[in-house]
Amino acid sequence: MKQRREEIIKRIFETSEAMKRGMYGHMLSYFQHLPVSRSQLEVLSAIKYMQPVSSKELANQLHLSPGAVSQSVDALEQDGYIVRKADAKDRRIQYLTLTPQSTQLLQDIDNQRKELLGRVMQELSLEELEVWLKVQSKTSMHLQNMQPKTPAPNVNTKETK
Image 1 (cartoon, rainbow, N blue to C red):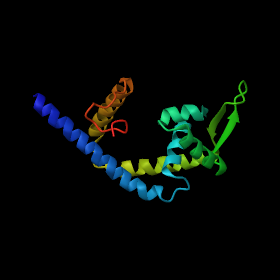
Image 2 (cartoon, rainbow, N blue to C red):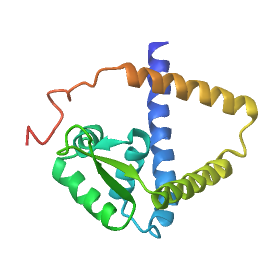
Image 3 (tube, rainbow, N blue to C red):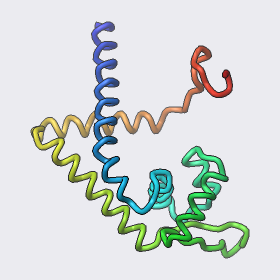
Image 4 (cartoon, rainbow, N blue to C red):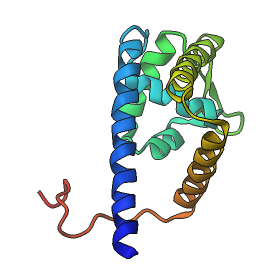
């Protein structure tokens, strides 16, 4: 029974990775025509869910260096996708928010993703979709509640190279 469970988990991991690569391939052609880079798109998406947010909070959330976030933020502000507003109590802190232009861009991308997923999932029955949603929701909730682990000692990381 344990061996069967391990084999199923292995197959779930493999098919999840295959789905991710497939979605990435389809979306990559769409992303090539966007007016922002993929890293800038990640920044915009994070701001959407966290706004108003400081650059420091954004860097922590995205696990990026403050410099990397600053570069993206500067370019996005220059192109009119975000605005910075100084904190009323501490003028050194600047909060980032989306402009209507970036809100529309993110909505267009979301619509594109939904259309692609709709085409991919049109073969699934309502019952299959409900089971998928239940499993995905349960897995997501479990991941959110877990504490991140450090890599096992035998895994090559930047620190061990």
